[in-house]
Image 1 (cartoon, rainbow, N blue to C red):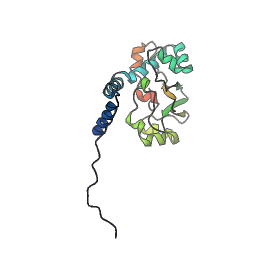
Image 2: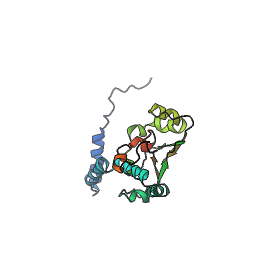
Image 3: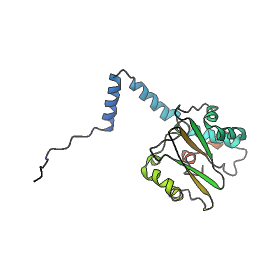
Image 4: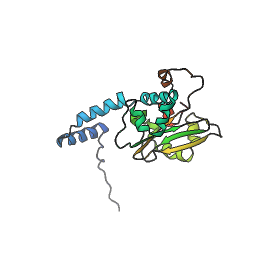
Length: 199
């Protein structure tokens, strides 16, 4: 005869309660948790925005010398525009789309991106279904997300590593000759720099 448990399971702390407990533990060790949290929120909401990456793309579209520097050494190139990469992001690789090659990025282990350049990853990027499917059936995943590429376009999937981050350099749209960098940057989206949209 099995023993029956009639007591209720212990309540699970809310995310807010868990965060407060971690903050309190850090404070008790003399670590300024509140200050770091405020700084991180500021960076995430006001600095690490996709508009930064859009500036990089627009500059690459209009300045061939910068484009080559971006392809050769992404970390150094974005630094020219005042964008710093964390120390552990040792490499930033710009993946140039062409009419015959389309690049898309993912992180099969978690949700790593070049967040200081293209912004924090969207929720769907962190989802296990995207992470698993995009490497196996990339064309179907892109189609599901609204990007239906012709069969002759080769799709290359790039998996982020601990020290290497990627950004996609989309194909410059036709009819934008003579546009300013600012106007071009307004066309570029986070999805485009991840590779699940054309721009």
